[in-house]
Length: 378
Ligand SMILES: CC(=O)CC(=O)SCCNC(=O)CCNC(=O)[C@H](O)C(C)(C)COP(=O)(O)OP(=O)(O)OC[C@H]1O[C@@H](n2cnc3c(N)ncnc32)[C@H](O)[C@@H]1OP(=O)(O)O
Image (cartoon, rainbow, N blue to C red; front, side, top):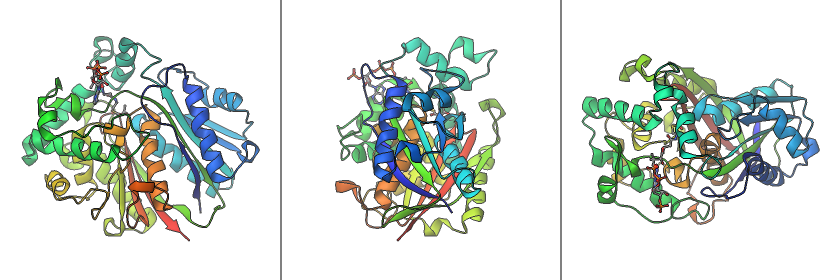
């Protein structure tokens, strides 16, 4: 068995003067404090990449910076799926006896530490290295293409997509660490500047500074524990033009495998933490994972189903769209929030019952997927 024994999260937004390593350290120390562990208790480190500090030995660099000499260290790179991929690896490390307490950490000063051009080039890395990377189209352009196809196939409208941004912003308004705190409306999203049609500014996650961390342990600490019940991955393509048809997407494969690994069904889930780089990402993933029927997710948002007090609370911290997106740490914030909800520590955001949570991460352009079930144990 493996347990998430502590979590740490910085506010997202601007952290002028903080390096990626500073943000990682801040989140890591918060996670250790939360777990009641010392640095010397950590024998494994997994760290996400930073596009601002692309060191080929980042895990070792961080271990030295943070003052730990682990017996296992590894930096992982599967785009937006990295946070959950590291959690899955940590789960295997502790259950196989390789490590006792694995620190999973990521952080980046992507907003204040990198020029706009460097940021665009880094985000263009999901394109074809010979063509798209030198020309620099960014990820929003690829998601825009996917959105056009999905809207055509399932009768989804731009107003439908806007509902997801409205919901994420409403949730962010209740979290003091979120990058954005002003409520937004469907009309404001429709009027925001075009980025990659049909995606407009407010359909996109922002670029942020921030850090997130957690500890995965062999033994639980505290009265209420959070256990990793089962997880799985699926990798279907790298470049969007090699993507399979919309009916055979990787999320459907990874969730099927995760259900098998955990012995759980979607009907068991009480809290959802789903990757939301763009409004279309959230719409598609909710439907791919079985949290809504095809083309029906927006209607479920409108009915309050995914609201904090709804039947399936979703990303109650505000998600990537409104808490913010600092690379790998962005999606790790989803896990931090799920943990706070499951352990009854989400303050004014607390949901009624977060006994079983479903987490899902997506890397690239719906290319790499990790699905994970967490279970509260008392
Ligand atoms: C990589 C993987 O594996 C999978 C993934 O994660 S995919 C997601 C990866 N991340 C991205 O692609 C980032 C997407 N977002 C962006 O590229 C940019 O935010 C954007 C193109 C949407 C806008 O950038 P821009 O046009 O240069 O806007 P910019 O000039 O920086 O900001 C203008 C204003 O809008 C705000 N803003 C910028 N982006 C915003 C957003 N997404 N939402 C809300 N507000 C935003 C800024 O705060 C700024 O406000 P102020 O004037 O009050 O300061």
